[in-house]
Length: 406
Image 1 (cartoon, one colour):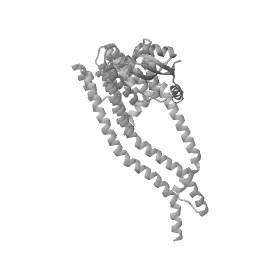
Image 2: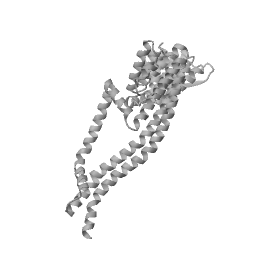
Image 3: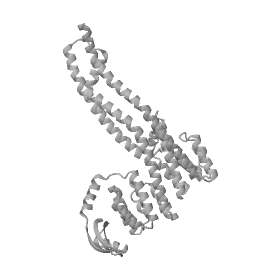
Image 4: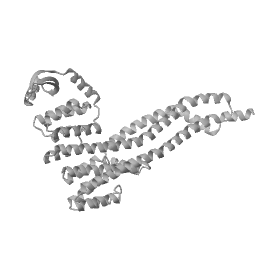
């Protein structure tokens, strides 16, 4: 297992540099440094890096789209500037803030030093570099345009990141308000209503129906709330496992998402934007059409579009067009099908796919703004209605008492 070493070296110009490297031993570090044209001055184990490795094993933070986009753009810039792969990866491994990504970059550097290609080294880290990323890099290596391809990957990742942020901004408000409403209801049922229940017992008399219902729900809340929380957690875990392992369940769930009122249209536009952008990236990078259709089915994150991609793949394999099988899938509007058909006829399919992606990016932005302005008053009204109904149910017996006094 490789350890981390801190080193000081002297360059050919006489400058002293220091850095860090992972290797099997000090001898291996010295050999690498000499191969890079440096003269080793001091090599020692890096205890700080070792403690960081222990932290990585415990936490294993995820590599986010933003991290990958920054990595791709910096990597492309270094390669286009004339730096070797090893030098570029060595610098990136040291300056990358995400420890999981930094560890993966260090592993890439070691594999390339042993003679592996970049795409083959990336394929050993499927949780960091997905199929799309690896296929783009492989195409860039084959065509001798790795820096250009990496820049396109960075553009695609940044666009996808912005798209996800827009969707999150649309979803955050209703989720937060729903959590607040749920918390208020639980607090009132568990702590506030029981206090009034004791007071009503002392007063005696017949309680109004809404108050009786509220008291009955409050009495059962101590059992219902924990049961609801447990069932929600179990349901979420089962859903995640079924979605990961059961293709039919995943397809039905993704199909249901596209039909959900209000949000279904947003999910559909996001999926179409990803489909068009990813396919354009792959085709422009020189990835074969059949392989590109396999990859785009996974990259969209929608089993519905994945199945459509497989239909298109079968059509292309038979020598037919890409557009014709898309007409059988309702998720693709007629405009998209026609634009893809025109792109095939004119030989500018990648450009047409970019236009489709840009169009749906703008649609997602306008939809999220409309949803935010629509949902805000609705959620405030729902929250006010729930809390108001509970308060009225609690005070109705008191109004009755005041009437009797008069």
